[in-house]
Length: 448
Image (cartoon, rainbow, N blue to C red; front, side, top):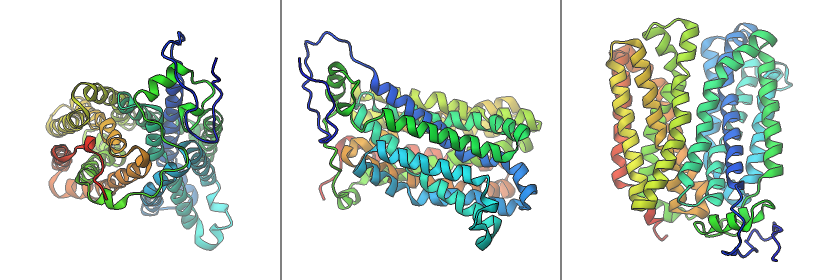
């Protein structure tokens, strides 16, 4: 009877799967996926909670809305700058270690947000400067999250499950965004705004410990993966040594049009996504006329749609890849989701009924994230060994688009009206859809 003890030192599979083994496959890969989902939820709790606590923070600390806007922007800057380094580290060191360190890092700085006004650095740069630095470092830590989700999915799931895997993991962002406003508000009202940051920081540290203790970089290293599950995974995934991915083939990446069309298309997705993250609540209350409390609940509907549609789109792209191949299986989901998002947002902008408008706009967010399994899996299809780095490059594009939306959307609304601002977002989504005509991830990277 061959041993099933993991061989962590080499990172290579030392177990030979036996087709005659009667044991059914274990399900450790799905436990790993649920842990990624939990990390995704925490990442968005730590990202969104300050938008709720700001109501008490601003008067308590003597900050204006403009100053608070600078605190919000500091996160985006750190997040955007460190996408590629975060993904590269995952390729070199593995998602287990990098996600653990990143989660600990941003959880500690989340907790430090509560005491930022009295930190020693505040004596040098002031309360505002201290908050800006803390939020910047939260963004630096969270930048490693999504690229390393994809790094883990690339190692643990094959082409026929990869879209579903990253779709479930990213769906955690929708759950986190939906639950954070009411949960944070309750903590803030009952215990004070500082406790909200302590609680979310502690939750992140707890999940970081669980992830580090339970997860491994590869199925062959995990003590509870049986030979049947290993055969199932490695029948679809060719094992890669854990000795590091080697030098990033930047010349090959630069010579591959698919990668750049993919980044441009995801930039379009990022523009539309950040409209929901930045302005949707105010649109619901100020434009559609819902009162504050009901508006808060209605503003969570796009994120609930994201939580459902993200894994659904991943499942669909996996099924289509199995039937029609990688290029068509990814492109059909990417293109159709972006087109349906554009149609839903365009209709929601002009429909008279407020409830129907919110439903259509929420559906638009769902269709937008229906595509994420296709986008993120395409980076693994291009180069599994460099999936983290390519994922970081992809999400850099998303954040470039995201940085434009919060500024351009209110300007368009002021000049032309909210319907026109939403129509422009719909056109951006449609442009992202058309770019899928040029995206062929199954062809891989071109030789350098």
